[in-house]
Length: 182
Image (tube, rainbow, N blue to C red; front, side, top):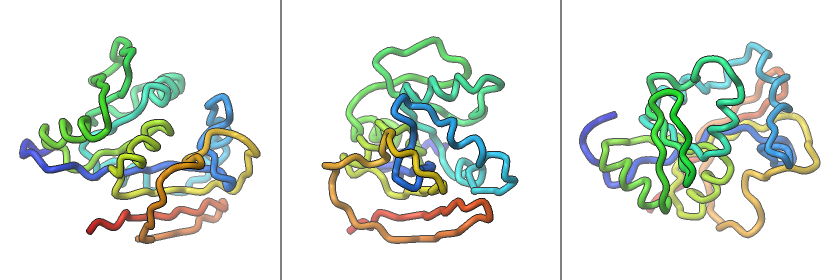
C-alpha cells in the first residue's frame, strides 16, 4: 500500500451468486459453491486480489473464512474486519467499525487505493453509500430458491457499465461492471 493519502480508495467487489441472485443459503452457508471450486478453471480471484491494497470484510464473512480451517488465506494482505465484537486476531488482521464513508476515508488516509469489499452486509452498506466502483460477479448455474441476496429490494438504483464478461465450460458466467462517475 502506498503511504500517500488518497481522496477515496476504489471500492471493489469480487463475489459469486446463484442464478437466482443469492450469495448464501438462508443460514449463511456457501457449501453450494464447493462443486465449482474443483473445475480447474481460473476465475481470476488471485489476479484480482493482487490488485487490491486492503481486504475489508464483515465479521460473518471473517468467521466463515476461519471455519474453512487451514492456513489464513490472506497472508501478506492487509485485512480489516468490520465488527463491534472483535475477536483475537489469527494473523495480522485488524478490527474496525464506523460508517462506510468514514472507514473508507481512514483507509485512504493510510494510503489505500483499492479496497476489496467482501461480505453481503458490508457490500450492501457500501453500495447504499455509493462507495463501490467495480463489481465482479460470477453467476453459478444453480438456483437456490431462497437465501441471502446480493442486493435485496429497496436498494438504490444505479446504472453500471459492463467492462468485461466471460463464460466458463462449467457454466459459470462472470461479468465485471464499473460504476460510472461524473
